[in-house]
Image (cartoon, rainbow, N blue to C red; front, side, top):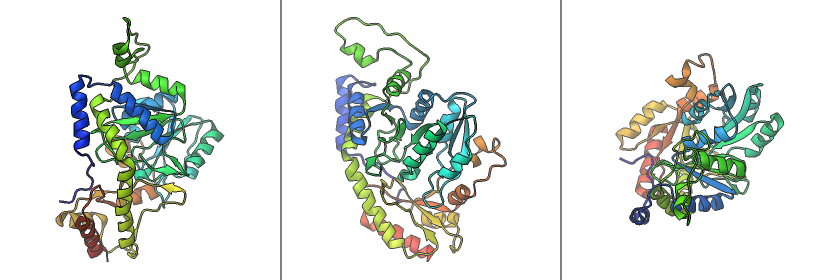
Length: 375
């Protein structure tokens, strides 16, 4: 079976985890601080806060942005459900906007149409690693005095107008889940250029503790912590951070290799008129966290039948990005909501294997099977 994704983790990461375990410091400590500093430098952000996963990062971002019960946050429905869930965690209401039919990122015009007196923030998503127009959303948020939060779960290493994702706005949340470009098993990071946000997120991720374990351990005098507010246990461990440091060192190379595979797919499939391929706009740079193909209405096979044919041939695929408003947890709240572009994209898209290293014979086999069933 050719898998849909596979993390690129070597003996270097295993050794780093092993060495960290032997230090006796395995929870949040010096390796976490090192990863934060290196990730901030990589993205060009002033600060980075490591968290247990991207969802907890999004939750903290909502809190420090001041989103509260009764507020509304505009976001795409076409995203993993964690995007909307993070809004729910603070008692606010997700307001789903349509996506652009070419990029599948949230549509700025529809987002503006959804703004009401209750709107507090816009939560944008860099769909499967493809950057969206950050400047357009910054301008929209400035116009309406809203907070901008970026769900960059899939976008580590992607760039927009020459700057890495993570450097453009005050709250950008990343995932290190195994299906992402780099992984710590699970884990996440929030970058920010706002010192107040940085300080409060560090506080909140560790139960509101005024002095973290590392500082207390390194102190030459006896110190006692206070718990300044109700917080959470959203910490990353030093074991995970040690793996993350090694992964970060390889990130640019991993992306380079992923892009080679993506370009091979693009070149081999560009003549098939019944499909639409990913589109990278000028000035944008994607890490190709996933490679999604849209089946046009003139395709001779349905998306689900194509997935079955591929599975029968030993190739794993996944459906296109979900629509949260169609999931059981949300559909009763939005029974009359219609997002035709999002719904069509979710129903007619297929994600094909892309990982590093991927053998040339497997790449060619995926291409041959797609051509067999689509041409």
